[in-house]
Image (cartoon, rainbow, N blue to C red):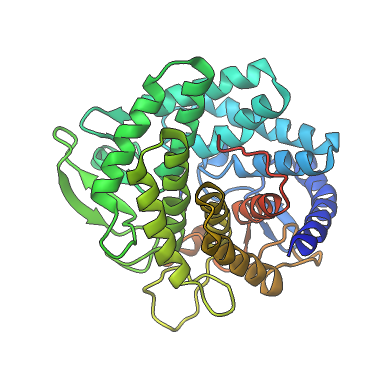
Length: 369
Ligand code: GLY
């Protein structure tokens, strides 16, 4: 497996070295690849939550190759993202994804002082979303004032980083309150997690669960399971509470039990057999979280599950042709809504595939910490 991962990373770097030039020339942050071209996000311009994955991918490839082209392309996209600070109303809890992997990575890997300042600015925006009733508000619409979402467990990484870099425990303190609410309200007895929970914005009491990007209310959207698995693993790593590690293991066990025989990942673990609906982004995220869990616990079962996922992605869903600018096929943004892409190449799938391979070969720059 390590040799295969090494060779695959080199092929990925070669392909992106070529296709990233077209993104630079078009002046866009790629969201997905269609008919041999990069296209930007279908919603909200550069404020769409996925904008950090392209620069994150470039920082991963810069770490791999040392090629300054990737650093400059990461900075170009990072510059577009920091302009979005001025939109405010379109930014939401996903500033963690957007700015940790762009300016946060820049500050971490090069020591750039402005990048560090921009990263702390983003962390303050995330802090500003905290409701003292016990949670970080997900989105801005007035009717969603009490909505919290499992994906936010990954965004907490921006807060751990801000506390470490400033010596100010407030950021991590907010992360701990949100993580405890997520533990209480999202984790189910079978080790699966809900996607969206509405809480009373005055008291923090549970109002109801809402359906999200999965098959139906109460089902198991696989990407949400992956966010929970990786997010609670990182929460344990940064905050050291055994209850977070226990949650990570339970979510990991449930995820591992649902990996298909071919190593691929269904969009929802409760979806009907037909039509086939895959989400390889979920598998790639889980392959990262499982490796991190294996590293922390020393338990080889999590590495074995990660290897099964990586092998499935490389065996069945890696596209080396010029039909797509990226690599990973069969990425699905949402079970029912095809607007953001179904069974296609989406950049955050490629980001997590590369992170998984970088972890496997011992080169991961550890951008979530
Ligand atoms: N954070 C939204 C998603 O995973 O689609």
